[in-house]
Length: 447
Image 1 (cartoon, one colour):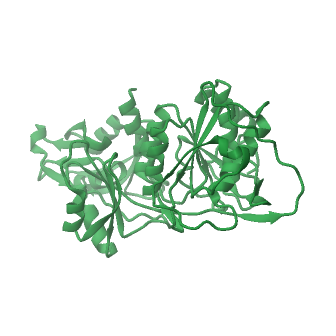
Image 2: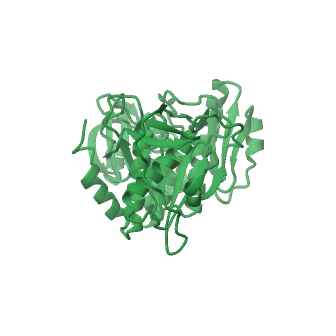
Image 3: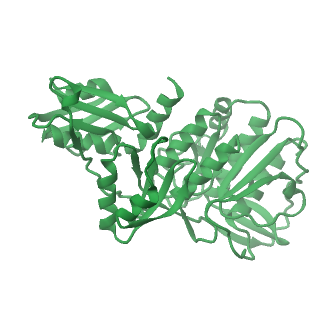
């Protein structure tokens, strides 16, 4: 399978339904290229509307086609699934811009399929959904003006990722945002995505523990080193040998403002990563560069749009390991697309499973291309999407004080350091994942 096809299949997984007990649902498994359906006495157009919602394909049907759909199947190929849904009707499934596909349903020739089928566009059930916002991505050759598009529909562009031709639009009301989604769904070279809030996770406390920390040696600049990206909050100024490991700092959501007296989340993850690295490395001087990408700025929370911008920077800078000690309950197409692109280029992604024992997916950790990390702590999220178990706490030194950092965040940073260590030994991403699953598997650990 080529890179484009693989990316298309992977990024579409987020439109699958989580359950299959209800009637009149369609579920798409793009990685396996399979469909599930449970449709009872719906017209073909109603069934296709659900298919559009599951896949985000742009579907066109010949006007006036009459057919009732009654099917129930699971785990069949997309071709066989479409045949079961459509019966004797003909179809053509073609690639389209932005990784979407076009599906034409007709009696004799494809040019008869002129009626656009709107997806059900059901509102997201995610708690973190920003209901007044829409993310749009334009096709590479699009001449559309995002500012003009937003203004015409009563909104404004509040975030830009021009290199990706993706834009964060904000509207005055939920109704206006929903109307915009429906309008954009009909446009040939526009793809829509929801935006979700991403809160800052932090659990820290000062400690009088006199236990010593690993001795960090200066980073070696010689040889082919490992490049790590920490996507997080702003990083405070570093002191001592830790500063020698810092590559670049990028702010994708504006400048951070005044720093607090206690360590920020990014500072905590940077030191957690380095302490784990120092405890693993024989000399502590293996070539290592850590880039920090701030997706919060001076804001209390970020969003999946800013996380996507951070991922784009990490991939462009050539990150071997990307640490994402953050997340929420909203799954983002643009984030998944970038993770698929990075994975295809050899980047490994690790994400925190979350600090609430809901048993529900936390994203981006729940993306199947991300190694999701939990901890043995009672508050840590434990669910089927989890891959690894890391330590529940770390100790760092900042501002002349020692701090205990707890949560799935330091567990993820520790596992990222372990992944980086094995990459520095010449192991491939697949080999590193195999070692981590052997030594820190969730299945073999606490549940």
